[in-house]
Image (cartoon, rainbow, N blue to C red; front, side):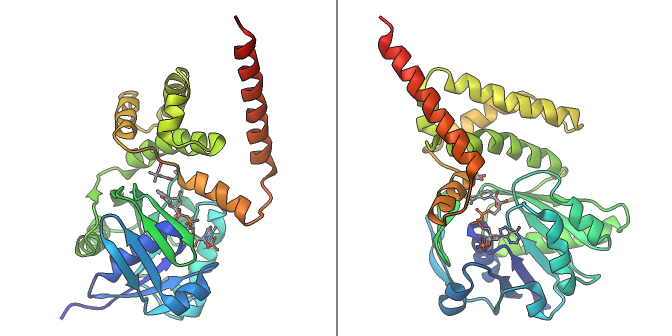
Length: 308
Ligand SMILES: NC(=O)C1=CN([C@@H]2O[C@H](COP(=O)(O)OP(=O)(O)OC[C@H]3O[C@@H](n4cnc5c(N)ncnc54)[C@H](OP(=O)(O)O)[C@@H]3O)[C@@H](O)[C@H]2O)C=CC1
Ligand SMILES: CC(C)(CO)C(=O)C(=O)O
């Protein structure tokens, strides 16, 4: 008989819920979820996943808790899919559920995400993941997933843990992703994919949020849009190369081909911006930039209509 695995999902938004669904398909997994704003909805109704790839499912986790401490258990895998803001404060919250055996799995955009976890839990293996799943939680506990589904996973290797042990933990999680029937690849140096995704996000997330257009509408908005986007991506590659990450400028062509093959998409940042408005969160800087852009646009339009 295979051993039961205790898994906790921290950050139960769009991406966390999607992977909670994937993990819920694994027979050996007992799944606990940490819910914040969707606690009531998920406690009562479970998580509803409406996926263009997987169909409609309701996931009923073993336990829904408000904080990791409430779970009162040490976990085999802690899967973090929260926003990487205040990342330094998260390990403290996880302390009550971490043991020597625990593996931490990070599914987030960004680079440097692993550092606070390595500092707090030097005895734990860290698996670092880049996801291309497109998902939105439109209302609490109800998640819409598009066709976009892919993930790269790799070790954030520890100098203090035997590589064979780290590899076993990676293989263990990989077998869950396989059983859960999602798309993924194991990669040798995940930092390359993390930075490649940052090049993508720096362009599309900021542009779709500032303009409130989708990617296709943006690219068609003017003849400057494509060259500007390419320059923006090149600047992020400049930074990556300075940080010693081996990515090349041909990445720009790959990412542009990828976006041109997709329907127009927004981004998780654009979703946050919309939600910020709905939730009445104060976002003065974003509002100021957006308002200034509207002004610039107006000036350009007037100049264009005044010119012969
Ligand atoms: N959505 C997408 O299509 C994609 C998202 N990503 C990345 O995946 C990660 C998750 O994004 P997504 O699921 O869209 O985000 P959501 O806003 O949908 O969900 C985030 C979840 O984490 C909780 N949370 C947010 N910040 C913190 C924090 N600092 N500490 C603890 N919990 C927190 C939120 O709680 P509450 O409900 O209370 O706000 C919410 O449950 C991000 O790194 C994002 O960049 C990557 C690819 C695609
Ligand atoms: C879904 C995707 C790939 C779109 O750019 C993304 O990473 C995001 O929205 O943050």
